Amino acid sequence: MITLWPIYRLFNRVFAGFLLFLLVDYCYAQSYVSGEDESYYKSYQDGWQSGDKSGRGFQEWILQAPQYDSAEEEQYAGFFIAESNRESDLGSFASKGKAFGIFANGTSFEETVAFRAFDRPLGVGDVFSFRFKFSGFINKFERDSDKLSSVGFALRHTVEAYASSSIAKSRVFAFVILEGFSTYQIFDGSKRFNTRIFIDPQGAEVGFRVNDSGYDIQIITLSDHTIYNLNNRSFAQLQLANEDQNLSPLALRGFAFFNLNGGANNAYFNALQLSSNE
Image 1 (spheres, rainbow, N blue to C red):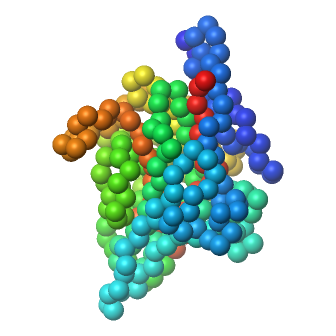
Image 2 (image 1 turned 90 degrees about the horizontal axis):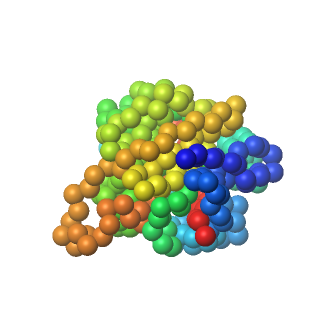
Image 3 (image 1 turned 120 degrees about the vertical axis):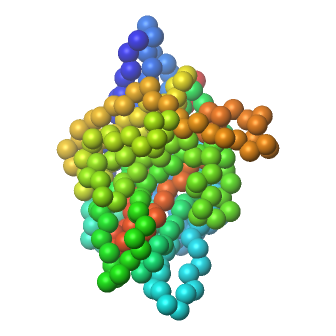
């Protein structure tokens, strides 16, 4: 049995893009693009806001950041459509000059989480891919929180998104840049797993495929287009609430992009895409 990872999406200036995972067992599975969204789509011409529903295959965005009103602290957190002519660190990561941007900085612990549900839960053979860039943790102010900071992506069993803290509920997988580490980290059935893939300053394209027992993940570092495959990994085991007991623990209903006290640098995301087997 052979796993193939061909790359089909063509961006206007850079290699990489849509990661199509095909599992081959004497014959090729037929796959098609079932969902996509980009920061340059018309829906985001007035910015990136809760309730925005763009592209196909996804529900509306739910953007959560606490209201910071302490007179003793300077705290800033939010969401925006980043433009390469305004953000010097965006560069070629942008799609048609744009990307989804998330910031969280200040003198305490600031957090932002962008939640989104899939139109239907991911099933076996489905692939979700996206692009992700973060240039590292740098304090923007003379003092900051001592809590551990992180930036990244999470897959979730539920679509509950009442507050930024909802990201901790029913998270079965996370791909993370963690403060103090020079490599991408994964949180799944093995708790924290060090990929030993160095964080790329130009960003990475991440493709996630559901298989019969867990998932496969492919990571492409955008500065050199090196491809890394991590196959047959397990999801985190969940303790489901009573109302969720009748749901499959492998039902992946949504995801979240998050910036938890990232500091001076923005977190950028782009090129959301889904593929499914016919």
